[in-house]
Amino acid sequence: MVKVRFSPAPTGSLHIGGARTALFNWLYARHHARAGGEATFVLRIEDTDVSRSREEWVVGIQDTLRWLGLDWDEGPYLQSARFDLYLDAAARLLEQGDAYRCYCTEDEVKQRNEAAAEAGRPPGYDGRCRALDAAERAALEAEGRPASIRFRTPDDGVSTFTDLIRGEVRVDWSLIHDFVIVRSDGAPIFFLANAVDDLDMGITHVIRGEDLIDSTHRVLALRRALGASDQPQFAHLPLIVDAETRAKLSKRHGAVALEDFIAAGYLPEALTNYLALLGWAPEEDGNEVLSTAELIEQFDLDRVTHSGAGFDRDKLDWLNGEWIRRLATDELVARVEPLARERYGAAADPDVVAAAVELAQPRAVTLVQIVDQMGFLFVDESEFVIEPESWDVVVGTDRVAEVLDAVIDHVERCDWVVDALALQPVTDALGIKFRKVAPAVYAVVEGFHRGLPLFDSMFLLGRERTLARVRAARNRLA
RNA sequence: GCCCCCAUCGUCUAGUGGCCUAGGACGCCGCCCUUUCAAGGCGGUAACGGGGAUUCGAACUCCCCUGGGGGCACCA
Image (cartoon, rainbow, N blue to C red; front, side, top):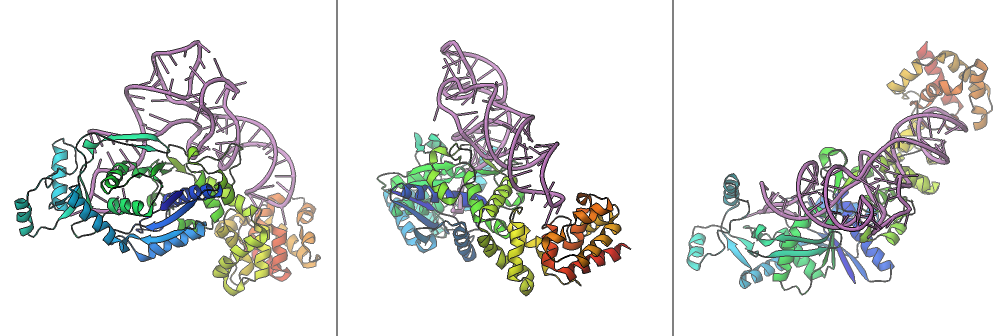
């Protein structure tokens, strides 16, 4: 029996790190189920911090998860709808003496921490409200001071747990200070909600980022105080870091939001494949291009690595190309079509789009690139422009006027079939290697000096439009 | 500052004492192919952070150092 959960905070859209965590939890559950076991993947939205959470992120995260193909069996549960549960637990802890009311304000705690730091003492709550008697408490309350609820951690001893990936992890309790579980405004805090829910939902395995490894001790203590008879297994994943800075991936270092990758034309197949490769290694047959089914089959916590994984856009690009090539052409067309329509409107004739996709599939890196490359087919001659950089290439090409004249002459009279549009014979007759002048001709016809295969492109464009463009370029040259 | 985690090519990684003159993938370089650029094919460049210890034998075990990252909130 395996029950895992992905529990994002809806304080932003799903980012690379969160997606990887979701994927590993999902793969773990699906792998277990495939092996004949019972497994449940729960989606739980941790929106206890109401001020930082937004409905649009709650929705957006689910959309992105679905786009990735990560479906959940339970949920989404919203913690904001379960406050009673957490508050009841807090009341119980208060009653048991495992927690106490703290009348220190946030500012006061912060100030005392700073003072402690300056004095060379370790920071952390100093325990001021730990042992208040009834009279002191009454006095503070009479002052109208709001109270938070703090969990009382052990003063000595060692906290230990066995991480599925890292083995035994231990830390002295003396280093872990009493922490707040209910804010003075009455809102429960992450640790509490997290512990209560995992307990209540019967979570068996907690798979999450390594940045949470230190908080595990607190969650474990909380669960024990709450009467948990057993503890879940923990598995802390290596962080995904910026390959350059080696620091936790953040918005400062380029795209990290999954939405950005979707918009940039990456396929879910490629993203899940790449994400799986960050911090996990497949079986040793050398094949890294893996479908979701293959990932499910092979996934195992044993093969999760221990050190931070640098995010490498180049490898993602390569994988995306691989997946574009692996898709059936019809399927690729189906995915490109809406994008083409969105970009070019009614001009994007479905048949032409399909033909262009077929030309693009063997070489494309992203869906957006495919859409870009077919653009020349959908603009009016009056609006057709050659990219400045590509026009420079035209101008810088030797004997280009001569070549364009010959191309015009050839296109005017040749049979209108792709094979007849081959230009090598034309340049050969001039004693010029086609390769030398190809970029210029590409630019003149497609607007870019690198694009879809030229002869097929001219055919798709049609004789008149092709001629119009070449003539226009020829005139501009003169 | 304190605590925790980590340490193999530029990057992702394989490797659990002899199979390692360290393997694969991406990138990069070269060649071939070619309807430019790509894609594809072939080949190449490139790493066990340092020092001790254990052992007949260490990338693999232990210790120290160094380095990197993470955590120390009334965020999650």
